[in-house]
Image 1: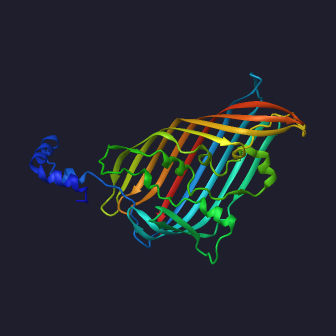
Image 2 (image 1 turned 45 degrees about the vertical axis):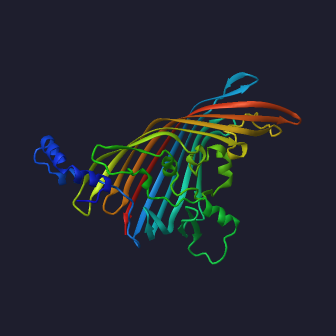
Image 3 (image 1 turned 90 degrees about the vertical axis):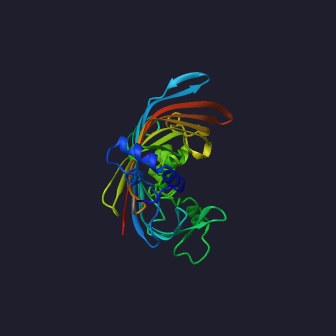
Length: 374
């Protein structure tokens, strides 16, 4: 029998006769041992020294449903057709040098490949028509990073594996944006569960899942093309801007299959969340330049951007190696109704005119992740 929580074990032993009778009545031939063994406890638990390769791909599709300008209280529809698609990919090799307390204490991570491609099919007054494509790369690719747990700060320190001196400001900013957790352990139930049991997951894990590895320092390889995409170039993932969601994520254990030592659990999740963020003008440029085409004298300044995204549909499936204590695969599909409001200021010489832009989007995000022990 697998270890179970002490309070449950004590209760079971104290009332063994009663439980045994009840189990026998409900399921003839079922013993106390069988009843207790049905409960599983899932935990992160690779052995020290184990190496695991992990691959993540996040596809973000953004389709504009409507756009309008509000000038002096008057609404005016903006003739825009816009569809964007971003595919971000990450491949790493993790070595768990030290493990304890349900978390890795030291990880040696090798960034095998890091990249993204953003494309847009646009029909706008300023961007004109046609497709735009931008490739993104990161200075992380080919480098190693050590994540070390610091119990004093309850956080991970980060340093490059080949570091021989203090990193410069650019390297420090790159390290500071990285997230250690590529294990999806936040989706696991906190207690022992049986098939069909449900549990709640902290909504914050969704943001991390949609931005695996954190801010990977992706930068466009073609600055001119990236400038044309402007606000639509979200290679770093919209989750980085939308903030931490509120709402509920409910998990359910579907089943556990396989022989002892090679058992695999399948869990499904339903996602009902809302994202909301208020951004400063520098955080996101104008979605669409409302100035007349070719009029370079008119300057556009973004005062603020408000993003409000409500989940229309969200599901996920996690396959977990019960005995190895790691994820095998994870698939997540999330569709959001996104409302964006931007306050702009149009300037021509000393004349200024406030303008509000309101846009409605359908935002679809898909994550596919897999890992294998080496």
